[in-house]
Image 1 (cartoon, rainbow over the protein chains, first blue to last red):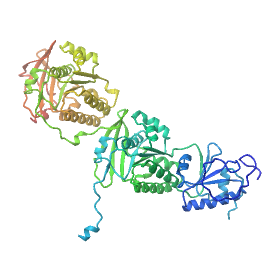
Image 2 (cartoon, chains in turn cyan, yellow; image 1 turned 90 degrees about the vertical axis):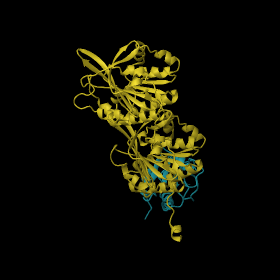
Image 3 (cartoon, chains in turn yellow, brown; image 1 turned 180 degrees about the vertical axis):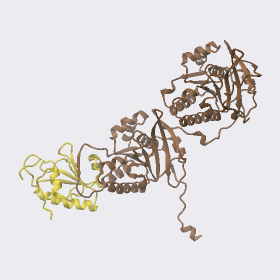
Image 4 (cartoon, rainbow over the protein chains, first blue to last red; image 1 turned 60 degrees about the vertical axis):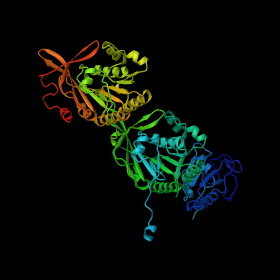
Length: 122
Length: 503
């Protein structure tokens, strides 16, 4: 828990149910939030959602990931310029970081995002 | 009866979607087949985006068919700016929801791939855009960029592209995808995209030929329908977009009238048994200084005197020179122009490409509506073009002149001063209806000039070689030369004599 790329104390939001974005750019506690763009209930989308939970757990709940189903809100995908799904986007830095894929390797995802969390995957 | 009833109906004549590039639509029997996918391949700078945008623009402005532009390369703002010179109000169309953009151009972002993915995001955005704009046409420009974006996952991009194409087809959209090529004459596209998504393949070329760019469009494949084969030249014109230059030789359907018009010279009219035909093109061929421009001047003045409008396109001399020459032969071009009876346009052949010259002449004819047109000289134009390009130009020009029922007069300059024939004559001569030869004739220490009507389609004509003089009132034909040396051939075989022999 020592160093976070984002400033301040980690938020302990814990795993939460996927919710459709309301267009906000930050998490519940004012921390920058990641966004996960998925396309409906495709197999890769389901895997990405499962991995999202693992990711949040691996970060001890310090990562907040909004889920955006682009089939329901294509305008958001247009605005963000999403081509591939799933895409995990960190818009808190400029230029934004984009991670494409179902996040099958949690350690790699955390490393890319700059979180030092441990992969709890079997 | 039952067996025939179960057979799938033969594909009816495919409905056509006009692209707005008229001559191209002619090549593909009226337009791109509705609901199908066409790949437009070309090297960078070959005009793919212009063609694609024109396809959308034509649907929006002329046929009430909204469109979607999926851009992988330039941002919508860049496209808006780049296409403005063609007169396309992309911003206005976006505001009125006639055109929707899907901006998939590269963004400033850091990206990695972890695990499986698909391009459902792109498809969802495209479908959203097509539905909200009620689009009938869609452009994806260029899909090569999409492959480059996911360079490690080529097979996936192929699969996803096929999925997108299938979904768009299901929506009834007519799809135009552009793809980059590495060379003008090589494989159709990088990634061999055409093999798995395209019903039709069109190639745009921008080849360097004799230090000049030559743009052409070619239809390579049209699934389930006929098309005209071969490359057709085109040019990009401000406020119009892409204009293909039709090879009108495809239809030799000009009416052949019997109405005669004066050549502007009474003696020459007599030699041609009443003057040139109204819808014919006459070639005046001769070495420099033999009187070609004089015959042109007579031709124009004769038309104006008969109450016609005349157009002169000059490539060798300036307006000042032409007007001064005319004055010295007693013809007042200034007064004719002031009366709106004459229009003289002079420019260097090098000022633009041959297709542009052709378009310019066509535009001038459409605006000024002359009854006669002179081009002085074709040889000057020939310098700037490859041989095939020049032949195409001539075919287009002569057929255009004839179709408009205009009397045309073109000049060609012989390279040698005495006798001989120029290379240009060889193909010019078969495309023109009449040929008048002007030659220097050496006779007992004097250099005379001689004129001969070599060929005249559909008419009797005098066969003699007539000596002529030039004075302040122009050309005066004199006696026939009885025993002149063989000045109308060069002794090495005259390429023109067979043409004359057809009558």
